[in-house]
Image 1 (cartoon, rainbow, N blue to C red):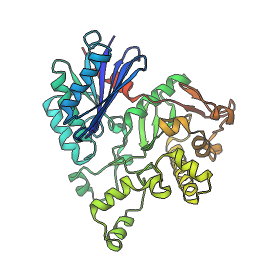
Image 2: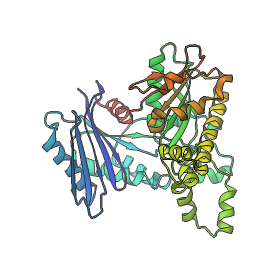
Image 3: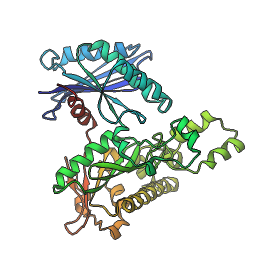
Image 4: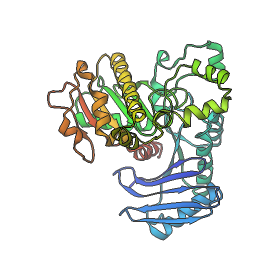
Amino acid sequence: MSIVLVINSGSSSFKYQLIDADGGASLASGLVERIGQPEGRAVHVDAEGDETERTLPIPDHTAGFQVMLDAFAAHGPSLAEFPPAALGHRVVHGGARFFEPTLITPLVEINIDELSALAPLHNPGALQGIRAAKAAFPDVPHVAVVDTAFHQTLAPAAYTYAIDRELAEAHRIRRYGFHGTSHKYVSEAAAAFVGGEREDLRQLVFHLGNGASVTAVRGGRSVETSMGMTPLEGLVMGTRSGDIDPAVLFTLARRADLTIHDLDELLNSRSGLKGLAGASDMRDVLARAAAGDEAAALAFDVYIHRLRAYAGAYIAQLGGVDVISFTAGVGENNARVRREAMATLGFAGVEIDPARNEAPGAGIRIISTEASRVTVLVVPTNEELEIARQTVQLLP
């Protein structure tokens, strides 16, 4: 077995999963959170699904990795019996520098640190996790799998913002795209599911969770994606605004006396569904709308309006579409979102089967009718498995 320990680090937490990259089985997973707070929390889940939890001080990521190692030793599986051949690290922003899985060297660490200017909420935490992981596992390769890498195939016309060219180049202002690991995994899984020739397959992948993005994929390559220089651009999300007229920021700065920090916090943390409806979870929004909350009903309508707008635009960019996939928390589990998002796409050959769409299920499943010219799927994403698979590509 090619065992990979996948690490997804943030500034005050990290998730982990021990994966057999060949067979796809998860041998264990867990979460270490509230790092640096007076009381930290660690959860470990073994292959049978048995969960154990500890509450204890976890001063930094290095201590957090020791807590993880203790959990493996106490609750299994034994890392002596299933030693990781490598560690795969999720890195959110790779700029234009990383376009494939990359062995982590001191120079790569410097690059990840420099790119923190483009992802100040994500890259510093990833770097902390990498350094703690290398201290805990000094004798195995560590590989960076970058969320932006899948979108490095975007054409200049797709990634260029129409601002002063020299200024943009000096400050690396361009569209990079995100959720790339998920979009890659889902588009490849969907292509394998439908079969046939992949070279000309035209796909839309809707990754709808608290963060949300849509990617147009042609022949396995990303050709357009909704997130931009940061994960703020594009669709309406749980707490992020998505697309907005930039002049709104100038207006709020002048009239409401909001600072740059205030505006950043507004658009990233107090907008989207939360800003419109007071709740960031789609389930709560729909419950409030069903109870007669007009603000929640409007929030849902705005969310769907943006999904349809992007679907239509990306079908135009692709010249048609063969497969549409829904993934992530909302995409996989909310039949109403899927139904409403696809309701106006009959012109493109999309026809949803109500019974299939409403039926729960595990694994990849078709929700379009037999007569639909476009195959519409629900495809559970597995970013950790994709990271593990990309990591083993670099092993001898």
